Length: 405
Image (cartoon, rainbow, N blue to C red; front, side, top):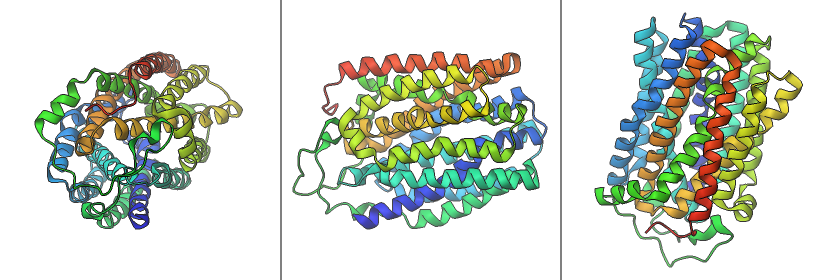
């Protein structure tokens, strides 16, 4: 299993080279291309809605095939091609079409990769230790991106995304195949609720998911409540992801400092991932989700006050909870509550419905509000996070710790 974990770690590292440029610096590239704040909000929000159909359809096909590696490889090639096309795009409509296609393709890779990682977690691997390599390269990309953009201008950002795409294609070929797991024992599913219960004699080959299984999952009230909880907590980051760098630049921060602040946030995320096992054991999957929601309410309320750099640093440390703890909680909840054959579909529904509809709506809201009230938009994000916190608390009371079926 060690080789399996190394290969997944390498792919996380490669994929997050793209995210480390795309998230903080693509809005600056869009602004450099001449798009208005409202147009930037549209370009960054439309993919959240398009993924509602695209991501679950691709994940369902991958679950049916039981070959997530092959699908990831095809998507990685598509991301590279679209990044090259975007570099040659001008005007709102061409940029919207190409950027949206690149974004939904890139984001669809993530739930499929999480499914590959969770298959290893079920057999004893530590998810946090695999995932932290993605966060490490996010930091590297943020630092390098800030330095390069400061030296070469905002137009250089797209070429850094192209470079990340090349590395991601290479890493996709190194991903482990499904048959690596078939002889491995399955670790007891209670890891996220306070300990292991043992192992089975051997892991059977997971069967392909069917429509009845998908419908059962989609109709489960507890799973729907989970989508609301994780979706709103993550959606509360929308204003920060879309306009955070622009707001900081308007406050006089240099691109290098902007990259540093992004890196500080991810460093706390890395620390949590590196030592995630005792936190998962102590607080459980839903306890981590509750912590993420509470921290998000505090973080965005403080950001609305236009804090100085000395305060921005500790606020960025909260990213370890608002994103890191919430993400860990969501991943382990799916691993505990959803049967393995439906894991990819569950991850995709979470990505499409929670991160799609909710994050997309919050991004559009952010664009509309930012054009009128600027950084006060963060107050709306604090309200969104409060909804997620309430949903997580209700789910924590309603779920008994057992799989859905």
